[in-house]
Length: 445
Image (tube, rainbow, N blue to C red; front, top):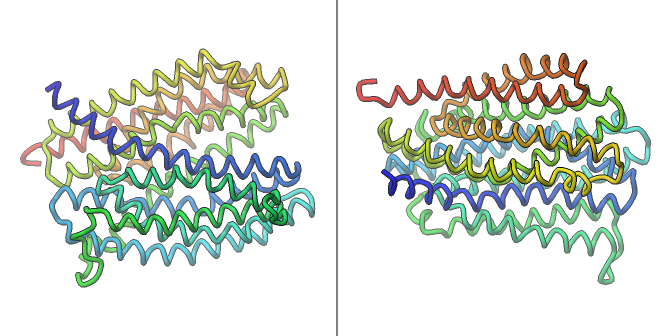
């Protein structure tokens, strides 16, 4: 039993650790944009920061919906039906085309709305210029990540992580050259930041094509075989992907609503909350790789018709690894709370409030990591509708209301306690649904 657990842990880590670099890369792209525009002007950093948030909110649904390709690929691979993966990719490219058109309409609407959202003509112009260039990354990302999601589903994550990791220094170098006018190039300012991101994404997308040269793709035929309804057609991707996309929209909307309510508590509270949210997001880094690995391996086992005992064993191994990561993060946040807060602000009041929040956040992270692993398990079972309903009801009917009520006594801490209550409810809901899914694996069900 112990040797089996070690093999499961090794497989999860082998698949999961490269995906940490994917998360880190995406986080770094936004960080480079914010830091570099901060050196240009206050109006630039405010405009670009808001535009990035709005842009991500606009495309999150489409991007996360496409990620259903990963779990379907894992299932087909586990069941031995690899001949269906090529048509699945073809369905993915079709949906990517449709999503590009829909996203273009959403981004165009956002572009027209920017003058009404931003406080000054200068900010509006900077945001419009940035969006006009940055929006072109969307089709590149959609089409390239059909290949990435397929590679992940096949358990081939190393080169995905390596390519993402290599793109970060490229972005930094291009920003230094183009945005700030080094090596004899004229300084482009905010437009240069957007252009640097676009060039880096274009290079990354072209490099992702090399994933098709991996040995696991050798017997996958893209042309020739028709898609099968309910197996690898576009509707199969949408059936699994749409609830995931709606879940991400719910997550982002919930956090945005919390931030708007916190803003009523004053500048110090809002600044501390924003910093705490950034740190909280960054603390996801390690668990993201493990959760995606859990999706892939459980997807393979479902495709291979694994027994309840086998799947349960994998879940216990995944949760044990998550506990280790969670405890390490918890210890770091608690022991270094003041030092971490000092990296973000020089205001004594903000530092004090952030440091106190980080102690609370450290323990919320443990609950959140558990909820993410349980959510990943349900995604592996392809029960994504339950994921959406549990998250949505926990966040909007419990977390938001409880946070607002508790804030009357505990200020910004009350909102984070509300977030914690939403997480506890999510863990309970996911556990109930997952128990039923495991029962269905028993012979005769």
